[in-house]
Length: 517
Image 1 (cartoon, rainbow, N blue to C red):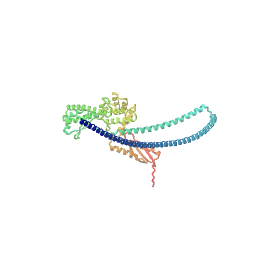
Image 2 (tube, helix red, strand yellow):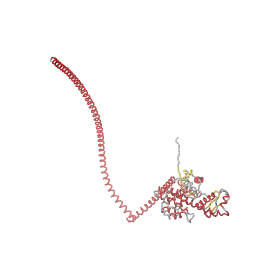
Image 3 (cartoon, helix red, strand yellow):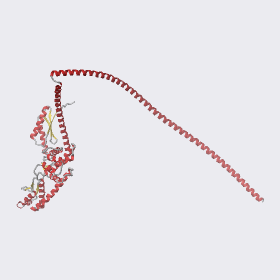
Image 4 (cartoon, one colour):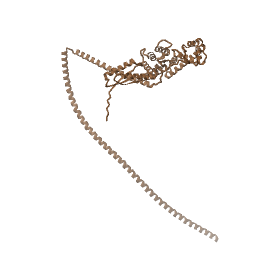
């Protein structure tokens, strides 16, 4: 029992000891927690004070910055207000000066108005006095001349009418001369521009009518037994074959260039083939004629396409092809027609007319030359009748008939085609005139002008269409100038051959030269 009590007491003592230890430990923990709490509180207060100081410093800096900005803005506004005040002060001063000026002007105007009023009264009085004097003088003149007022009025009106007629006549003459000068200058500019815008190669062309024969034996075969081959060839082709002693050459002659070309091509084929007899001749000529028809159609289509006229009637196209084998003074008629078409279009466009219609009239103006070998009549009339059958417009018909001046022009396109025709025909190298002959003609023109007394220099310009003569002002005066120009023009007419006309321009000038040393 004692042992049990001892054990219980020991346990109680252990528990008490344990409780005491735990109490001490709890007291130590509480004390430690208080110390940590105090430290945290101290740190928090220190950190809060630091943050408060930082925020306060930032707030003060922001306040200083805002104040500086406000001061600047205030200074700028104060400066603007000061400038505005100065401008307003200046404007006010200006307005004051203007008001003073206006006051002075108003005073002057009042003075002038008063003077004008007085002058008006004086003028009215003088007009009344002048009317009385004129009435008295009119009455005295009527009494002296014995004329009534109506008779005097009629005489005065007739005199005024005569004076007006003279002045009107002089005015009309002056305007007419001015219009002619302007028209010549404008036409010259248009023609020069047309020539410059259309630059084509020389169109001089020669149709070859000779056939090379390789041997004399072949020449004999061409002639045939007793001349039957050559007679059959001439009958079939409608040409003349000239065979002379010239070795290796046979000449084909015919006024129709197409038939001559068919004959030349046929004879070349026969010579190449070697089989020459009447039946073969007819076969080759028929084949060549068919090919020539196709060639004419091709050439005509190319010409129509080059001139940009796709709506031509079908029978007109091969006629254009025939012009490709026709020459006039060595100038190929088809190339000449294309030149005239382009030049006509340029001139018509410059004048505000229909360029397409002018180009059509220019291309077809010489279409009659494709048929004048087969029909009687001149090519202008033949061309007009041919084109009329296919509904060509009146401008084209009149240009075809009247481009040589045979009939009056009914449309403005006929003079345009005439001008383009002259330009194409008379330009250097267009027709059969070598460059040497052309240069020699210009030199002769200048030499002729230099042969007159008082002429110092002479220049042929515009392809020989104008000669400018510069005379010595000490020898030739103004009165002699006109006579000298007329004498030069007359001598050119008498001694020279040239297409169209040549303008003689005489220039008289005085040059004074001094030297500063």
